[in-house]
Image (cartoon, rainbow, N blue to C red; front, side):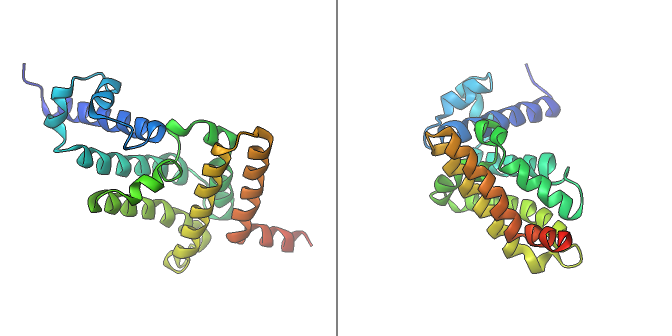
Length: 200
């Protein structure tokens, strides 16, 4: 039976989304093609209809995960400083920490992406910069490029804080770390300082 273009595209997207969740849960190296295809409810033979290799799927899934993060979190946040605070508080929430399958690909996969081939690194770079530019646009609406590195630095600090919070066995300490991370990220972005100045 021949399927139409729409069906093929929907199947491909199902594989990409299932792979994105499994990569974040089990790692890229810990996720074989058969497990990925089983998650998508498909046979191994269908894999090469949609992707040339596992590396091709990894690059595509990483890009898709970052696109989803931008669409669901960054693009939905309010404009300006209020939106920045929303993004930071969502990112460093206990809910985000405890649901890594649906969370940030940076916090889950950075170490493995570092070892991936150039197409995956490029897909990651392109995707993360869309997220960063959404943050930078709220930080400096008149000149987002001027604060891109600052936004990237805050994002990196949040990803590291989330990773460490997930790794701690002491749940109380993990929660305290998230709270401190929120304070640190807002301070780096100039929001804590601004709040203190206006309340003085």
